[in-house]
Length: 264
Image (cartoon, rainbow, N blue to C red; front, top):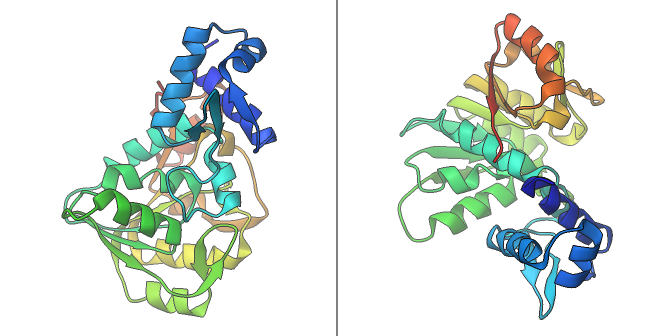
């Protein structure tokens, strides 16, 4: 079993029982792995802020390294975490010093914070979680300048939406808009959260280029709300996944640049 698969199974065990303290012995039995292997996986998950250490093992840490993360948001953070982090690293490399970037809230765009907090760029976002994470990672040093919209808080996602958020976004122009999605196919980018649709569309309209950050599970999926037609997308950053190759080839043939990142 590959390391990523073991870590995903460990997180799934904890996610199913949030109060469970998973011991090394229990993990060995469930995964069929050696104690040394399990301890390495526990240590890696703790180092990445996804679990808490206990006396005999580890415990689920739903909010990751950001205490302001809403519970539902924290739960989604453990879905394909290595893929999302690799996608975010590649997307951050698209930015140049001095750029202005609009970032929509989501668990993949959240992973950007690690890679952009110390960059001399300007961030415009509708996400309390992203704003706080960038601020924490930047610390007292110089780095990204954050502009956070006002509006009505969406408790499950940590997003702010509504007329205030929309008026705020109309004030700015950006080089890039970085968005996540629930689905993307040959026709459109789609999502589930109707409350932030107008804000997402404004980010696209107020930016020169749209980059979509979507792990392999979103490719070929369609959610109920259309965010924008695929022709509006300049760049898609996703992880390599064999079953997605036919669709990604067709998307490339439509003129969309697609980056497929390897996940270690």
